[in-house]
Image (cartoon, rainbow, N blue to C red; front, top):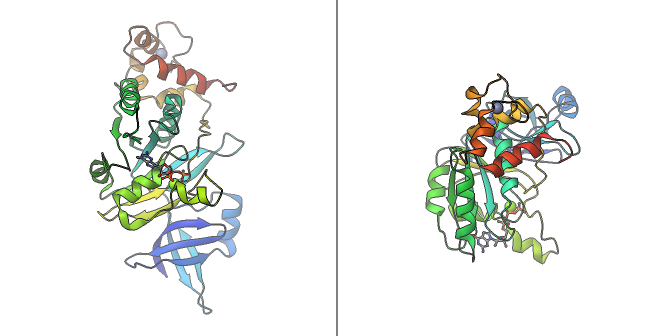
Length: 300
Ligand SMILES: Nc1nc2c(ncn2[C@@H]2O[C@H](COP(=O)(O)OP(=O)(O)OP(=O)(O)O)[C@@H](O)[C@H]2O)c(=O)[nH]1
Ligand SMILES: [Mg+2]
Ligand SMILES: [Zn+2]
């Protein structure tokens, strides 16, 4: 039996890197574990597993270790959470200033996913060399002022911010998330040139264009550390309809909630709400507060 880390799950094939070895092996599920996975939670990139080799040379996944963390997103067509990656230390929300244009409310929604997953998060604004990008990045920084989130400006094209990004990824396991086409894979290639992750243009030639990265994949970085590259997504509904949990996912609200008149204030219609007062005083960003209201109401 060998311990290892799941790099990628590809429709029934589980690519596992045994600890201390360079070359991954493909393993399969059998028996009870297969039943459990079918009815419950899937295995995802980052899972710690034990694998065993059968007489015919094939590998099977025998055990999955409890996870230390999970990046969650809403499952397709439902509000139930789905796991994107396991055992990561931090999440990166990657967007581009332009092409595709930065959508501030979408950033808020990605940040909520990271918060509900209880992961530290870094915001990355890519394609900074493009015209108009500095003004767009400045606006996002102003919106996030007071949240505690760091915003890192990058360009995979000019390498602006890439050494800084490499520093943030070093010695940790991270997961990148963000819309398709913003340059997530390009940035990881820039940080670690040996990776050769597939990027946009290649799939354009194949007639695709969207969703160049097709499955979550854990890769090692040249400087030490690991990162899960994920396919872009923009359907970022929170699965958590309880407004108190949602409110908790906005750190600048969290910091004020003690001053609200009512305990468990939803910051929506209660009198004496310190968050609403903060919005009126210009101390809490009105755009973020609008995101919160829309995320909490199902018709949004
Ligand atoms: N101008 C400019 N283009 C970039 C930059 N980074 C990436 N691109 C381009 O943006 C396109 C998308 O890049 P990808 O790295 O495939 O984007 P992704 O976020 O991984 O996309 P998915 O895998 O579909 O989620 C490609 O054509 C890249 O060449 C950048 O900093 N500046
Ligand atoms: Mg990609
Ligand atoms: Zn309140």
